[in-house]
Image (cartoon, rainbow, N blue to C red):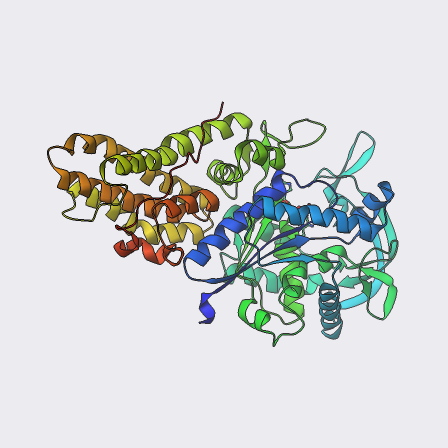
Length: 511
Ligand code: MSP
């Protein structure tokens, strides 16, 4: 039974500004996988939330002349709203300012102290508040008189203060063993190779506390120190499962996590620090960390100064949430950087949704209304072409499962939309309208195959476009309990007695 549980997480977001397309992308990717695994029969726990401690947030609140907690409450609410707008199916929304999280971080800290992995010393080096990350001298360059990180381009400042350190160097070899013994621990492979190269150069101990500000979780028994925000933030994946209560149902069912979805910029924290902390605390490691690429606009990273920001909220308002979800998954190959533009979004809506899937449903349902008493004909003798069409999809299920399990969402969606294209072609080529007077039996059999195909395509589209695909399944009266991957091979889930629901245009063409 245990193997049927699945735990997937998004990064928790800094609530320091408005949610943008990068946030929407991380969340939509995780949601698509969560929804698919549920359709496959898994009990899924899907977590998202906000990362609210640290100097970055404290300074942002000060800039806005707001009490820090109040500032976090307001902005975290925006991210919570975004989960509704993006139609995420998350089971929980964690905030690092919650008490349950506080307890969890303290416990993990104590475990690291007990294992002898924490010691007190002095930190001297570079820190980027924007990345909440420490950098070595060789990772810094000077640009226009400013010291910046070569990796992220963000400004760094010199820090000298008493600090607790985590013995990261002691985990160097163990980490390399993990990467070697589990080749899909970090994906995509190119990202894994970067991490391996970095760790092979040798890891230094990591500063895990700060004394120069107060917004965070104090170090137990020495509250002059605040726990480093990344040690705090990463622990969210455990606190949502009631850690340190390891006998709780949630923890037992869902830890270790199956998949952490993150952006490539935060790979180092997840693929190096996180497993090292967990190993030191003698806790099992997550099964996989997948680092997706950047969403680019005009081939550049979106930024206010470049004026190339595509606001997810505007897009959803103008074009619809299912449209945005479909477009992002289809356009960007997960793992690589991907360019998005309004022009391409519109083309995608028109070509794939309005002219292909939408048109297929529309014309077939209209045909049934006019010629088949608005009901789905029974499957009498199927034509060879009809059988070929529906059998291909059924045979492909294994491959489609693999696409999802390898996080290859892009190829998954391309395959699914191709079934829709083929169904449209079959409808055109077999000309059922010309058979109405001559061979009703054949006409019915053609229609049967196409409706069965629409049902199965719609089930496969549920993770990506839950609202639209459910509407189609409503129209053809597929019961809620039949909307899953296991039912794809089950012809009984089609109802031949009930009239089809009202047809509405799901995907309008856009200009
Ligand atoms: N708070 C940390 C994560 C802690 S997880 C324990 C953080 N937050 S963030 O709000 O800055 O970013 C969250 C996610 O959004 C990251 O995965 C990041 O990669 C992603 N994106 C932010 N901008 C992006 C793009 N332009 N494109 C794609 N994703 C990017 O980091």
